[in-house]
Image (cartoon, rainbow, N blue to C red; front, side, top):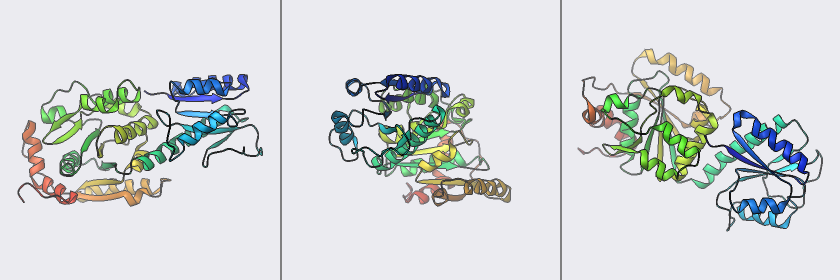
Length: 355
């Protein structure tokens, strides 16, 4: 998976090296730190590869060339580097006055505190910054979630039908996060690549996101989709940050207007991913047996820190589908052009082919 690159910049070279080494060793190698003791060395490095995070300690924020780069990368800057990064001010001592030059909203971290706390602060700021960047730069893109607390068998048929309906107006990519999605058996397809392959390549920066998705994408009845994971057990081993980064990459760089996430279990970062969605369809089947899981989900959601989640939830009681046995593409056609398809098109605000 992609490592988060951190540049530790401080004219106290010994401090920068020690902090950089500690960061690189912690969190199972999730971070890769580089240390710089002079502004000139940092500026030269930025010509090649921009880190994800830059910690600016003493002697750096005051440098005119560093200030120029910061001004270029602030919102509205005209000549940013090849990719944006998060800049943080590493303050020498508590109570020290803020330097004359400081970009509004630049996070501030106390330099002399336990390294573990520094790392927690860095990660917290980075996560918040990533969500803010998504909101500011991708206002024309949308992430939609579909989830069933009671694991309704009709969740995925609905999600596919809804994806096709939305696809009549926008470019939609369907992504299944289910551990046992059943696509190979349902649709009699053998997939060379699946979701795990796409995630690995995108997060490791080995390929362009657009090319990676295009190389693994399948199209069926007008629905573009990434084949679900063959080894569903691996989905629980992926970090929350990797899931969040992957969805943001799809939103920004896949070439689609809408990313539709079909959830299975509560994967790591589940509620954070719901926070990225503009709307989340919570599906149940008709009948009281689904009431208890739904009630428990509502209780869990109400305890989350993100108070806006409840406003995104749209609760649906799905119509009962036809249980006749179809195979291959005929099975999907049954869903798309039966009761469930009509229901999905009405929900999406589009007309059916028969209208």
